[in-house]
Each structure stands twice: as structure tokens, then as C-alpha cells.
Length: 278
Image (cartoon, rainbow, N blue to C red):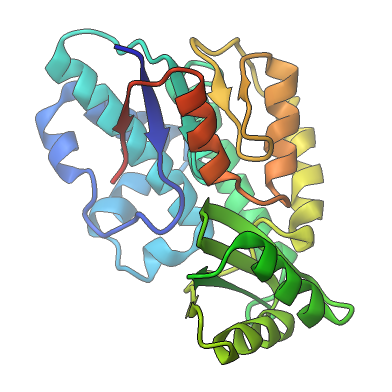
């Protein structure tokens, strides 16, 4: 069976996540221990015993979810009795980094350090309260983009996640996102759900973060992944390391083309999915 591995992004976190994996599978416990050592602090303690607020901080959220997702993968492999051999892999935003670890493109240690840096840089890029994100449910992408363009007024307001035909997340300056949200709500044709996030991800405000991450990519070891990875920025299956690095750079400030990524996996012949995360 041709199956694809998929991994979640931020928002999947919860206090205590992964503890049952830690307790049941030696391979999962070793994932938490390696993450602790790589980061230089006990991310496992924050995951198991931290508060909801602790896990909302993006510099903690990102390595926490990656760690638990890989622990789930190792636990599944232990239960299955063999290493999984995926046909394709993909992840939503942060999950793209998890897919790199899962397929052997980068090590777990480099992965958790990289996303810890990613979270730190994202938080520092825009002061708290300056940026915002909102989910728009019930309106197609073309219409949402039109409202974003009208609301920008010299600021940033962009489509950040294309999750389905009628679930689009917008991101940018809070004042511009609020203008777009109000205009969309006034149509009576869509719901607007403000997201509890600490930074405006996947918009032009994050471009400086992408540049710093691209520099860091050159400080870690890379391998050709065991299967192609469908990238967020282009929704194309890629196995070339150089192309994967560029895709990671681009996804920092470009929309996550998740709907298009699922279509790509289907078109490539995926027959089933294994989603691994908290």
C-alpha cells in the first residue's frame, strides 16, 4: 500500500501529550531524552508538566510538537516491529520540519534545535500585539485575497494557510487583519475566527526570519530523505536537498498550500495516510 506520513503544526499541543508513549516505548523515551540533550533544557518536563500557557510560547510549542510527533512515529514502529517505509511525507508548517526528521533528511537533534530557533526568531520578529491571524470559514480563496488586498492600506494582510477551498487563514498586521475580518463578517457569508497565536506566521512580516533560518540550514548535516516530501510553499513532491532547503526558506513567509499538497499526494498515487502527532 502506498501511504503518506503527515504531521501537524502549531495548535496540536496539549499539556501531558506524549507521556503514554514515553512510558510504554523505549524508542519513544529515547526521542524525548535526545531532544532534552539537544536543546540543553528539559523540553520533556515542559511537555509533561507544563501549563497550557507554557506550551503556547512558540519557541516551546515548535520543538515540543516535533518531539512528540517523532516519539509517536518511533512508538508506532516499535509496535509494528519494523521501520515504516512511506511513499510520501508532508507536514503543515512546523510539520514540514518534522517530516524532514521522520524521513532522515535531518537528525532529530538538529530538527529540535532548528525549530526552537525558528520559534524564537518568529516571536522576536514582530512585537506582541502588532500581528494577528484569523481563520476565514465559508469563503473561497479568491474572495478572501480580495478582502486582504483592500484591507492592507500599506500594511501586510495576506492569505497564510490554504487548508481547504473554504477554510483560509489570513495573517499580517493586526490592524489590517482586523479590517479584513470586519469586512468579511459584514458580508454575512463567512465566519471569522481569530487565532490565539503569538506571531503572524506565513506572511511577509516573517521574511527576515526566513533569511536567518536559511543561514542556519548550512550549519547542519543533510541527507536525501527516504521518500519525497511535499513542500508547503509549492505543493510539489521533492527529494533534492537543495530544493528542500529553499522550500523551507520560502514557507516561512509564504502561504501553506495544504489543500494543494493533499491534492498532490493524491495525484502521485497515495492510497492512505498515517498522521502522527500529539
